[in-house]
Length: 348
Image 1 (cartoon, rainbow, N blue to C red):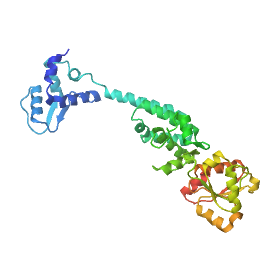
Image 2 (cartoon, rainbow, N blue to C red):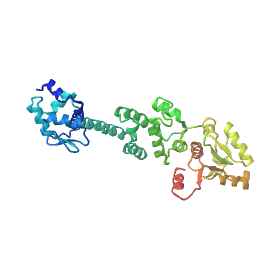
Image 3 (cartoon, rainbow, N blue to C red):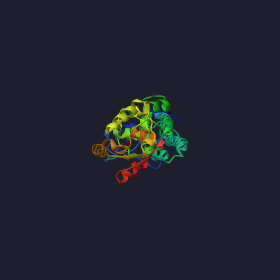
Image 4 (tube, rainbow, N blue to C red):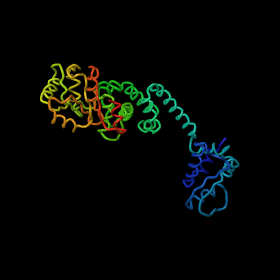
């Protein structure tokens, strides 16, 4: 129904490109109203002249340039250029995209994605809290570049990790390889790693900050080893049975009444053996290393067995305390009576 040649000629001027762009934007966003207007705040003389000529009106003046859309559509129809402005814009600039409908379909896809993975974490309170956090704060959309398909892939891997937490002394690289098929997928800066460390902090009950130490503590809180040699646990007079390298080290230090530090690697690869009867069934747990030093200085080899967690328990500390509990020991904990101290006491 359009005269495409004459129509393109009518809107061909570069000085009318702003008008074409404004009209197409309104059609695509679903905001076009034939009784509305389009306004150009600071038009050039050429833009004003081209617009006046298109509308067949006397030269206009003033500040802003205003085009009444019902008048423009009447020009298009009466000039037999097109049946209406929508058809005219499609001929001049190509098919119009229903951007409102497009946005709606995208939001529906995001909602479907949310529902699908929400059901997978629904039975765990901490996992639900993590899930709502990454959704409500826009973390997932940012990491996926607003791509629903990419977001689905990230969530698939992240939820696999969440289902494995808390772990029992597994390395971060091993966890990444088993859950994501890539041993570096949970490294700092990786999208899945960013999602998963938030989950670790939520499940482990620790505050996550944008530092390497904070990330390591988050993984420590759920039994994942970032580094087998970092953040060892400090002990005093904790003799162990067995002939492993770790047991021998602990026995030597206990005999001398000297504190020593045990790494997660030693506990994992050369675990000691504990028997409650050798320690009268009670282990004292504190969070201040200076207490360990004072006890060693004052009592030496006669001091009661003491484990120092140094604040938030590291993976090594958590592994050691779990080994002692499984062996039948009772833990007596001492810490600060504030919210941070109570959170640590609850973990112990």
